[in-house]
Image 1 (cartoon, rainbow, N blue to C red):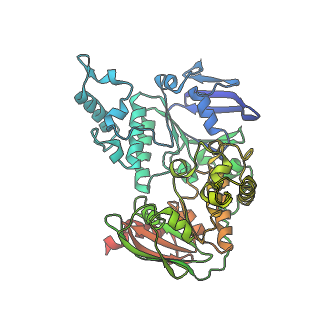
Image 2 (cartoon, rainbow, N blue to C red):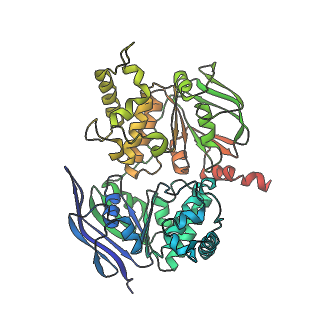
Length: 504
């Protein structure tokens, strides 16, 4: 028996100056299903959702929701009609508590005798949390919550509108494995209640884990919709990129040389302790472990972005003092952070400015501080070519690029500082499968050119596919080390969770 169709978008076309972002695109969502929406960055997924929510009016096509032709005027209009969206970037107010965030803008629903009732708001929130079996304190300030719990607040807020359709954009990109399982449970419970979920993701494994069907988009075109049980990952990749990616991790064999960086006795009270490691010229050192294990914090302290209590850093055998990122860059250490939006890309600036900003002094005329445009343009064009950045011009805002191209720009930025050691935190988070392969190739090429690379990743296939040597961090300590040949998913997971220690 076929399921009832709750939402149908047909022949959606959207034109922007010089670009056809969507070309007669379709989407069909059934009641009580989890539909994966997938495609490379720039495939049109976000534009399609913006058309649905009324952010962009369609130039052609129709939207039928619950049997009626509709055109929403704004996301609030869509929300009031039962379509909610949970964005990849958390949109909560950190200084407010859980209950305040959930009922923000709907204070009338928690009023008693004409006044807002805090008690009533907490009770109503607690009722929703219990219904969804989510362990959260309605009075907890959002800024005190983990990213996973913030995602749960977003989910409860969407459900509190009695939404019939919830759109989830990369909901697991910043979650650890155990947190992902909790999210999956909540999503499955919503499905049982008849809620329809549009699940936008770049993680192929979770599409096969949780979704019923998958719709694929490429270059602004609708490709196909399939039952997940009827296709393989290889077939899905082929549909996404329009070609077969035979080697997702194009690891080239580099000549591994002398020790470039050595860290001794690194400590920061309550954050990490007794951290000792080396990385060699031409080596990719993978840093694995659960989210929150201290991986990023160790590297931020090494880069001078966070303080440490004690420890020594040696570059090419000489001890160096690093108190700030500026010191680190001067010593030959650069770091690409995990959060492209908040600590990476500067969205108000152009692609060129984002590429050259860490190295401005190189392009300034001595004494007068005026930027030498020819030098800057030459440096930008070199990195644009090296990283194969796709952009309309050097003046295009970086915010207009896909996630994969933004990441390439940021790698190019740090390459201009000519580092001996490049730290890359979550290099392919939120990036489509085709761009992932390109970035992996670029990282491998840097190692072949003699650079020492430290790569933090929560994706075990990425760690296993790209690393020459792997360190596992747990509770702020390095608990396991192995080379590429010895590494398996099982031994990395075992040490990340401390299962071996507990059984002993």
